[in-house]
Image 1 (tube, helix red, strand yellow):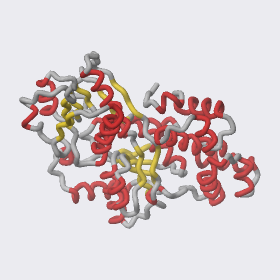
Image 2 (tube, helix red, strand yellow):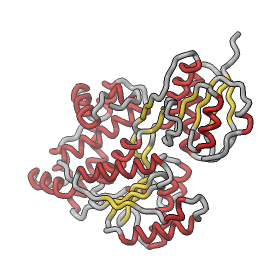
Image 3 (spheres, one colour):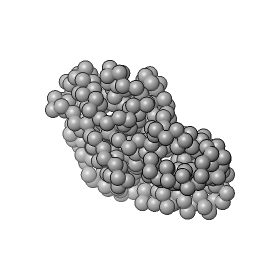
Image 4 (tube, one colour):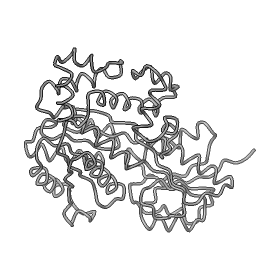
Length: 385
């Protein structure tokens, strides 16, 4: 009987994102057999575990986010898969959530609600946060919108910056933003801070400021006041694929520097973005109707029955206020649901088409590729074009 492979999981257990990575590894092991796992309880950026120096294992899955971890991992000479965006060891294969796709999802979620003023609030210490902010602003610029970027005070780059100092800086920034404004927070903890800063300012959420986070940490999001909407990265899939990749490497396959990114599953909408930020009450009602009924197969004619006006007026107001037609709005809502079903279920594309209001699977396929640039099957597999 072969002994199980010994695998070190150098992944912190202190946050929801990292725990989802570990859930993904667990899912792979349930399907393909056990490993002997070495996992130390740790926080983000913790020092390498002392046992790693003399450890006689077979492979490593690591969040390589500090030079100390990078040196310790490199010294082992073992097959390793990196699941961090820091990219401190460029020769290693790495898997990460797609920050560009996350930012685009966030931008479209806020645009769909009618916002024309936007802000991004991240954490400049981390690559993934900077990438999300850049992609968010670039995507909005392509559609004719500007994005205000929160600039942390210099002291923030030190880990000694206290919560109160950050809140004061955020409150000053938010106070200057034109309202209503949709703010994309680079991760959920930052989103919670933005909401607290709004509360201190007496700014209404979501009517004056709408806030969207990333990671969908359900505990944090539900503790927030109001509950925080959040982009759902496909972290579990990332951990699952990292385990499969490491298994191939431990079996002798040579993989160096290969990167793979995983698109988000969609947005978990909670009260912090549950708004239609347009003054036109008829357009607002039409957007809400589309949001609630798009996947039942409605068309623009159905929207006009629910919100009576001429088709020409509806088209004109939609393009002026939202930058898209009613038909495009319906299609976007349907495709968002398609993405969720592709990542959360094993339903065939024909069943997904039926559940999302597409009369023909061929039309779904064409519309999906036109919007995302990839086939639905590749999206489900986590590939990016």
